[in-house]
Length: 352
Image 1 (cartoon, helix red, strand yellow):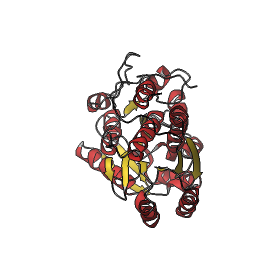
Image 2 (image 1 turned 30 degrees about the vertical axis):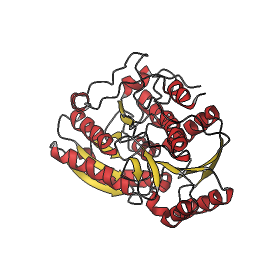
Image 3 (image 1 turned 120 degrees about the horizontal axis):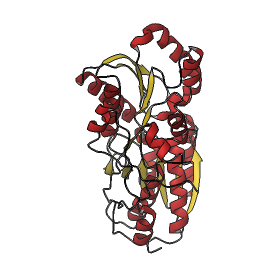
Image 4 (image 1 turned 60 degrees about the vertical axis):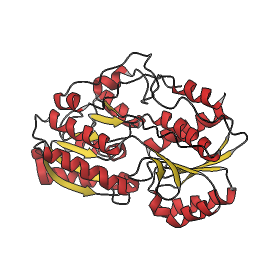
């Protein structure tokens, strides 16, 4: 099991970001700020996780959390991988409906994309919760989704932009990477652009490229952008970490050191590979991390509430700006997993 270290999450993180200070560590006794009451565990349930793409580190981290929480609450989990395509996710929905589960978790894709399938789920009266399924977070999300679990995406975007501005001494030259397949990705990128420009930075380019095809596209894109902007390009900002999984080789081929510019800044999610890059100073400077494993537990708790006709908890987790000092302070762990007692808190609610 990965070491669980609680990183202080700063909702007032603009001060930290704009001054370039390292992420601080809170003491190991920091309290879980989520729900303290709710229904006991519903017995003998089978749930399905519809994963947008298990190659995405954020989606995989949440899925692992769901599986861990389901084992504790006593449920059976089936994970279906949409494999990064609309067609794959449509097929996964079809498989899920054939299984007739007691609940569904939409993990990491915009629910609007699968509107026809959502209507079938609602007709069948199967409770649904989601992770990053659209711009409205919390309770009663569109499409019949009981709860859409996420950090505040706009806060995440602002923290990433603020860090870049502070790191560049107020005048970054930024390229933003997003994917217009997802409304939340557009909203995050738009907020990054707005914040950069508000603070006096320059957005050199706004690049729309599919998350599912980053392995093929990011190398050539990076090379072209380097040729186009040269030293004017100081920071690369992306709506999640996966874009930077494939940028490093192109930067290295151009003779850029791992800690050189353009510096990679991710507005989510805190994948294992991102922490490895940040810790070693190899082609990523920060990630604005989400507590992915905790969010997996939250999804199970929200689904337990939905199955039993109880109210959504309304809990929204906070992000953390993780730089090299913060990543090194996590020890051998490549996961932002707060040691704040959330497992015990949820188990107590469920009577487990």
